[in-house]
Every structure is written in C-alpha cells, then in structure tokens.
Length: 560
Image (cartoon, rainbow, N blue to C red; front, side, top):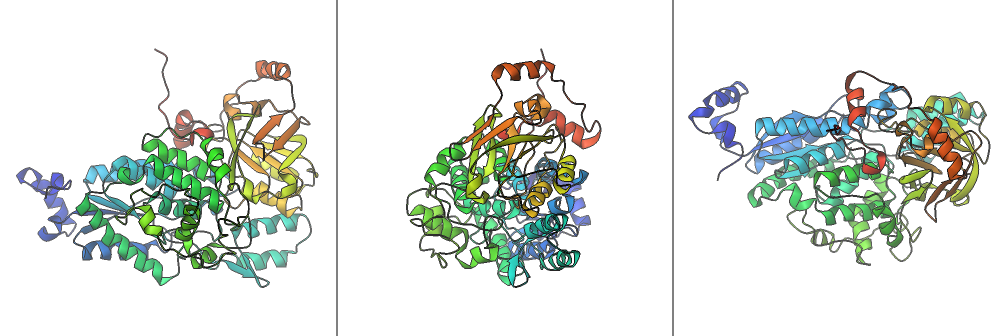
C-alpha cells in the first residue's frame, strides 16, 4: 500500500530522511507502518490541558495497537479565563488561526499519513478543525473533557459564578470571605470549565460534525472513561486510514448545518458563530450567519446548561450526552442523518437507540425550554451585517428593551463605570473598538457582563459590543456587531444618550437616530489610531475580516 509518508521513508533518495528518523529512535519496522501525527495541546497553564499528557499517551497506545506509528507533535493553547480582562485577551482569538497554520505546517512538512487531534479549550478546537479540513488526511479528534462542577454552600457552581461573585463584592452584597470561598471551590478538577461555555460547545459540536467519537463532548476529564475513549480514538484512526475516510468526506455542508442545529438545541456559546463560519470556510462553504435564524426558528432549545441554567456538563453526560440530544432532534427530522462520521458509520447509525436518561437536563422534543434555538442573529441600522446574542441566557423582561446608550471606547472604561455605580437600570452599555481589527483580537467581555450581573442589573441593563463574549456570559449581551467600529460601522457613530432598541424575538437591533443624522456623523468620523502597530497582532489586524464572517483571515487586496 502506497502511503503519504513514503515521501520521507522509502527509497535511496530518502536515506538522509531515514537517518534523522534513526536519530529519533524509530526502527525500520515502525517506519514501514503509517505515520500518525498525534497533535497534543498539552501544557501546564490551561486547566483543560493539564491532563492531555495522559490522553496523548492513551492515543499513542491505541494507534500502536492498531498497527500505526504514533508521532507526537505540539499545538498551542491559551486559557481564556487567565487571559481575561487585560491585554492577554487580545491574544486569544488570534491563536485559532495560529493553531490551524502551525498544524498545517507540521503535517505537511513531515508527511503524516493520518492525524489524531487532541484539543480541549476554546480556540484550540476550531483551530484544529480548520487544520483538519485543510490537510485532509484521515483524522479523528479526542478532547480532554470537561471539568466537574464545583460546590459552594451546597449548590453546583462554575467559573461564571466566580466572575459574578466579583461583581457582587463590588456591589457590596458579598464579603471578601465569601468571594474566597468561591475562589477555592468553583474549579475543583482539571478540564474545560464545567458549563456550556466555548470549549465545551466546540467539543460537543466536534462530535456533531462527525469528527469525534460519541462521548467526546461530555465525558468528564477526570473519568477513566476519557482514557478509554482516547485509546479507541487511536485505534479508530487506523480504520479511517484503511478505509481512506478523510475530514472533507465528513465535514460537509450538511454536517455544518447539523452542528448549527445542535448548537441551537444545546444553547452553545455565541463564539460558535465565529468558529462554525471559519470551519465552513475551510471546506469552501459560503456560511452566512443569517443561517442561524432559519435553523433557530425550527429548532427547539432543549438544554439550559450553565450559565443559562443550573445544570452542568457532567449532568449532560449522565443524561446521555450529545447523542441523546441528537436523537431527540431526529424525532422531528431536524438532522441530516446520512452524514459520514469517524466511526465509519453515519450519524443516524451512531444515534440510533440512544436514550434520554434525564428529561430535566435534556428536555424531550415535545417539551422544550423554547420552540426556538439558543442563539439569534440580530440586524438593523446598528448592525447591518449582523450581531449575535445567546437568547437562551436572556431573562424574559430583556428580550425586548430600549434605553439610552452609555458609550465606552474600551472594556476597561466600561468596567470602571459599572463597578463605580455609574450604570443604571434601563441603560444600554456600548463597548466599541474591541472588534477583530479594532481590538485587535476581539476580546471577550466576560468581566463587564459579570459585573452587570453581580451588581444586580442583569435583568435591566443590556450590553452591545463589536467584541465578543465568553460562553460564560449571560444576560442581554449582544456581540459581534458588524461592521465593527474600526472600519466605520454604525456602532462607531453612537453618541451618549442615543436611544437603542433591542427586539430579540423580531431579530432587530436599532439605533433611534435618523439616516440624515448618521450621514452627518459618518462624514465627521475619523479612523482611530491602531492600538497595536507591531508584532503578530498588527499582522493579524491587517488581514482579519469582520465578526459576521467568522473573523477569518484574508490577504488584503491591492489596488491594481
């Protein structure tokens, strides 16, 4: 059987290559087997990645057992929680494309026959999915798994509770000792943070896309079942090699639409609306975020995991996981069940017979939390190209809201005003110049949303930004406003006190200012001096597109 790796292992011309494999300790017998790149995101700074050394070893064992030669190579990852609220957050989203590019480079340079991707947190998952589509050799994913929920005063808690506790302390409703109790108990294990935040959203959607084995999205990091899953993933990638099943056979347009459908049912992070378009771009799919509304209109929201509700990833796992959610959706024929998956079977075959073991965690299809999905795309004169809100995490009284704009040019100024008691019930906080290009890097606004919630304003204050939100954010938090302020989008023209109208059921985001007045303001507007002029962020800002396109990178067009 001719293999891709023959390019570096076979023939006299490749004798120098083999000498270098000899230097690595590989035997002749190992080089006669398929070379499987095991892309490990292990590090000692991300809690969701500190266990990936064990996952990596389990994958390598599985590959070896099934007749392949595993070769570990690295991928980077950033902990969004540790990067939150300072310059570090500018370096979070940008890593998605770094991860995709560097993994492509490693795989192409060394001619691997197959890949096992081992991600877990936030940008690491979509970055490796983008790389998988690009490289297009047999590939399977196995993540590190979610963290178990913490417990404070007998209640399950998570990282979002921790950020909100800081807001409560600022409001004077919580003591420093109580904050300390949260600090010591909300993150009790390794793993991706325990609610339906970005990391867990993307790991669940990896399973829906067909790129991970059943259980990939929900089996807790500390369960031995996660190790067994990793061994099976290592074995299964060799089946994919034998059958020549590749990512682009699996990640089709129909699979992406399945992911968007399950996204709505689970109530995933708004960040999925950045990452799904970017993944779709790699398979040549023209993904308009407006798709979300059409799918949302027919997809019931079945889960209210933290921060939207009191259940956590461990509860979803016990209830039957992503497969059980998909099986509920399939009762109304909402999925493309013919899609191929890494099991070698179709999605329909994978979910056949799955049981919903807890109808409180996964609502039955005929008894949903709502008849429409967890995310919504809002448009209007404030966001002509769209904006995104996690509808399932918005309290009912804020679904329709109007109030005066309170305008801030950066996240830090907004936080100071919120904690300083300058924001009042009814206000609409506007944070701009935080988009992909303007930030640069499109920072997450978990600190301001948590401060609003902690100050007791979650049911009366909205927040609008051209930045983005953590999956841990809740409330009327509307992000990804496009076009962003840095390119002269309408959000750059908002003035203090302008009336803003939000109507989530009608999918509208409007600025109550006449077109004539906006034209006058536009004529006076001047681009802001870039925040960063050197290094990777400057290069990123020169290439990045708007949030409505998934903040993908494009080579700037030159005037000919």
